[in-house]
Amino acid sequence: MKNLRAGFTLVELIVVIAVLAVLAGIAIPRFVNANMAARGSKILADMNACESAINIYYVKNGDYPLNTENLVSSYMANWPKPPLGSALVKKHDNDDLMLDVQATNYAYVKPGSGSELDIRVGRVTLGGLTIEEILSASGASLTLTDVD
Image (cartoon, rainbow, N blue to C red; front, side):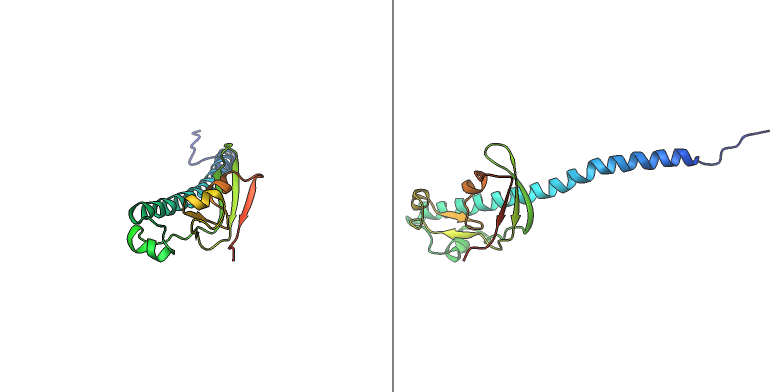
């Protein structure tokens, strides 16, 4: 009598499904964190790019721009918008900081309107905080909302 196997047994199929489920359980959270880390990197890159454009404007014109329209027309393609939702950034102490971004715009703060650093350098804020203030925040999470 010949024993012909035409397919897989039920046990073999269950083992394969279990292995795939374990792999998916490991991979999916990493992809979610990668998305949030990309949003965090975009926020920091946007703020740095805006501040660089502001400082280039100052070097070329001897004064800071009055508003973002003056800046965008010559030094930037457009004024960026922050990505809404959860974002993940590495703080100065290399700890993760979870940002809940509800702010819809980056704000330009003309020098002379705040701290000593603001007096010397044109700043860009998100939710009323500069890059340094975001990266130096205490705690593991921070909510950024529009400031009037």
